[in-house]
Image (cartoon, rainbow, N blue to C red; front, side):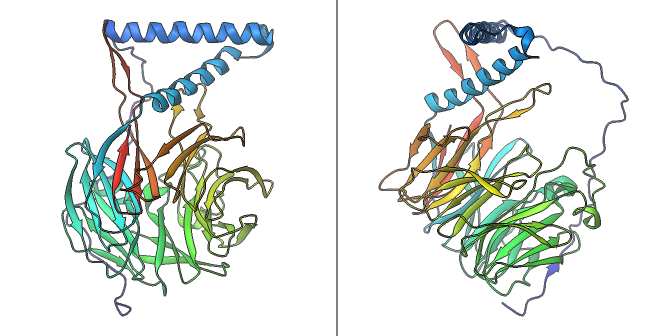
Length: 438
């Protein structure tokens, strides 16, 4: 295994580059809506109007005193409505059974209008599932030891319109698989210890891959050339989790090259068994910040999507969830409630899709070996706002989680009212079962 060199098999088909439309201006067209949708929209507008009037009365504020105050209230009301819809109506939708060991990682993808889940397990396999049919469509079993992380490749999707899965393992390799083949067509194996985590870049169409290893190093890879570009040294124990800072809106996604990534401010965040979270400049490999407040190994780290990479969310075996501000170099929030190790943290996708306001929810969630998924309001360190409990017999602990965002479906009749917030929550369990809530 250690003698295999990094290799790449070039796909036979030509890359399909995404071309921006040539229109210089776009005329806004308002589509016609059915009476059912119009009724739903009307009721939502009436509800928002009532909420706005209520807050104006309570706070004794005239709208003219604060610019766009009504928009702020609408933003708040819409976010609460969407989360409450999920909280009140969510239920177990699907149970996926196939793994015989702890599910370490799951990822979701929509490809050619089909919804897929891939999962990696300690049973050394990767399972691929069709969400609609609830069936396992492929089993990849070429890894020699535990599969620690799986991701659908943004790079192959963006440039080749191909559905490819990337996986890491304690066998020290990173493999790329076509969804229909059981043999990896591209292998990275320059780590000298097991690889525990991988993450694709948000820039350059996912061309760069970051990996963290038990050899205490982080590597940055160029998927197109199969080369290891950078090695980050500094952690004193195994690296358990990594993330890459979000795409910055002032950058051209197609023109970013590795030589200017550091100048643009892109960073890598890593968590380790040494109890620290470290921030690295992606180009200069310089270690920028060390957060040391966790009291046990750091199991999960995430950048906040809309904060230019300035806010970090983390979970740890010390049973806590924490928020960190890179600008101040300080911890800004801590959440207590879990009774066992926190294995996964995520920012929820509950958001207001409004270009004028632009907003991401203040709701985060965490999965733990205490067999619960807890939702928190980051504006407060008080008790969790919602808890999903895993099956006591079938799960035995939440080992990983992610969100699958779907198209919203609404229906409104005289006898039945239904609103689907368009979000499914997928989680993997210690006993190998995957469950989908929505």
